[in-house]
Image 1 (tube, rainbow, N blue to C red):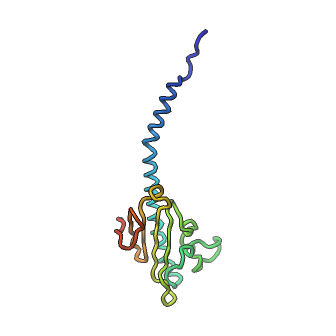
Image 2 (cartoon, rainbow, N blue to C red):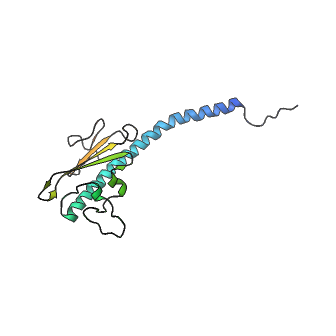
Length: 161
């Protein structure tokens, strides 16, 4: 009786699986770091977008800055006219306060003479160490600041660029 020698032996298959696992063990940490970097870049971009939206909101509606992040969000339909409560300046995802692994917390300043002249905005990773490592802060000055170990505040260093 002749033995059919076509195909792979069990040892050959195990060697191939071991090589694939070694390559995956090398590649996955780099993939995770890339995802964190992308989330952090998105968070900084979102903070810039919100800063720009706040300036547009204040100049358009002449009431100072918005009282909530949702006020900057989109109108109910594309044909609706923007208002101070739904200005249509940011997308609905960012208006909800969570985007690309970061959570955004908005704190308006006090109302003085019917106007809100200050605001503070915080961006924190949803899962620190997994979705991002840096915490961000910005306010009505437009300067974005970061802290790598705790929630960023107005005393932290500005980001470069």
